[in-house]
Length: 241
Image (cartoon, rainbow, N blue to C red; front, side):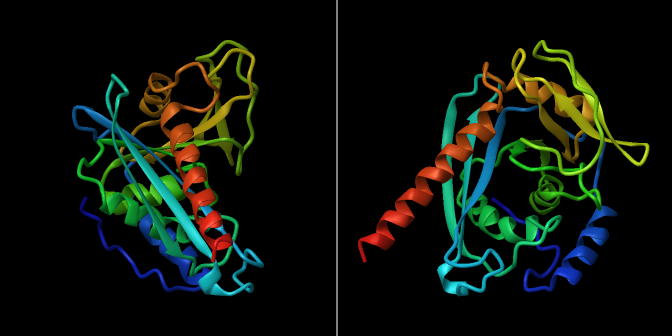
């Protein structure tokens, strides 16, 4: 799968924030979708020794990323890929994409089938600089992306009605930045936001279309489980050394 090279990765947190501001100018918040035949879920986890700030030794710290591609709307798995990349960026709130994206991109490079839409376990537009991981990844892939986060990063909300499918707006400084979406009756909602090349209304509709009765949409839930399995494998291999 082709990956766009839009910036350097060996940067300071201050430079990373400046890159986000520059990429924001390229962001597309309207629907620019092909006929959707495939979707994917993407997630990442960390294998960290010592501090999240990398003080425990760079070579001991890894990001583990996984991607699963499905046919749509059947949601039959087509392929999955994963990658492990050394962490080179510290944990800084609001700059998570600089920590996760290098590993995610390596996993996407291994795919034979480029997905039409990617669901990310992350925020997109619902971000202090309006460019969360889902938006950053969408720009790098040149694909439509949707952020499906488990918790709120910023903004204020009203609780949606208890029945699945109900949603309310997520607002920050009088601007709509996402939606608070009930994906299962009477269960805690998730936070959906535009990643790239998709409107908020379409992001909500597509998210509901890949839900299967659980709180977390299937693509990101499966990707999370896949990455956890890979992480356990890596930890087990370390213990065997």
